[in-house]
Structures are given as structure tokens and as C-alpha cells.
Amino acid sequence: MFRRQPDAAARRSVEFLLDGQPVLGAEGDSVAAALLALGRDSCRETAVSGAPRGPYCMMGVCFDCLVTIDGVGNRQGCLVRLRDGMAVETQHGRREVGR
Image (cartoon, rainbow, N blue to C red; front, top):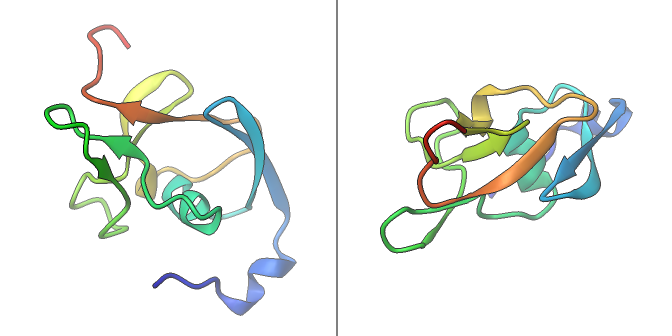
């Protein structure tokens, strides 16, 4: 469903951690777009059933792209620009108090 724009190959690569593993994304992408480009179709699990959820609207309305970024949970991946050294983690269930 999602495809890269033709100019994406010309953009600089950005290295970030995804669940503790180093991966590459494209400069200018949102975190959610980078996850989709890596083939990840889910970025969180629901708090009640543990069902996987992934980016849907890509404009900050649906909250299905919630991830933990640099230790802070419940961040909307579609609204955060990817940057070098960022640590992105799959969010499991609800955010813990104080994190």
C-alpha cells in the first residue's frame, strides 16, 4: 500500500535503533514511515488483548502508530521525524507510570 517517492534514494541515510538493533532509515521520514519502509507492519500491541497495531492514518489522528522513543512511551511515530541515534521500541501494552 505504501511506496517510496522517487527522490527517497537520493536522501541521506539515518541510523537508529529499533528494538535494540541498528537499522537505517531515510532522512526526512517520520518514525512511522521508516518502520513501514523496513517492512514492519506493527509498532505496538494493544493493552487489553495484545493485538498488533500499525500506522494507519499517518497524520496523527488514529494513535495506532504509538511507539516508545528514547525511553518515552505513547509517542505518535507519524508525527516524530527520524534522527540519527534515536532509540525506537515497539510499545507493549499501555505506558507505565513514570516512563
